[in-house]
Amino acid sequence: MLIRHRGHEPVVDPSAYVAPNATLAGRVRVGPRARVMYGAVLDAEDGVIEVGECSIICENAVLRGDVSLGDHVFAGPHATLLGCRVGRCAYLATGATVLQEAVVGAGAVVAIGASVHATTVLADEFFVPPNMIAVPGGLYAPGDPALPEAIKAVGFAKVAFGVEADWEDRIRRYERVAEVRSAQFGAHADDEIVG
Image 1 (cartoon, helix red, strand yellow):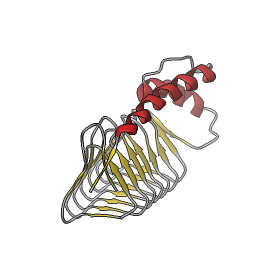
Image 2 (cartoon, one colour):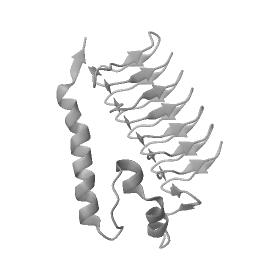
Image 3 (cartoon, one colour):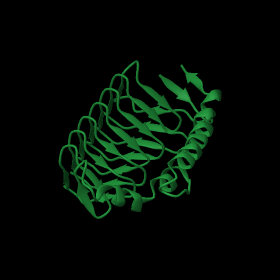
């Protein structure tokens, strides 16, 4: 389904394939021979999503905000890419997550269930092992006692939503995040399905 959002509608190269139940909203550009599979959602919000030549977006993947995928990128089933850049020939496996302002270098791999946290930059051909979390300056396993401090240093709420609140004040922080997201998602009320 192609949706005009904020006055912008998706552009799909004639050689690309977009599954009938995939959703593309706003300034989404799908390059030659790219494939957007069943249930995928590409929502540019007030940004731009660029899908490079011969890139594959698998089933139920979500791309939101300013997302740039180079050529020959593979985004596996249930991958989540939010406001990030992914270099050519990168491989993002099933359930991979790449957050705001992160950069995944050319040929890098984010393995099954792994995450690249906001503002993290992965070098070309870097490998993030399954279920690991990459943050600026290192890789952490879930449950690593140093992980919360590493994530705190990212300042995710500010990077992703412009919300500043103390790390320890989760209620106030997430209340403000919900308000920001509510306003952003509310902009979809005027969307129009494009023939």
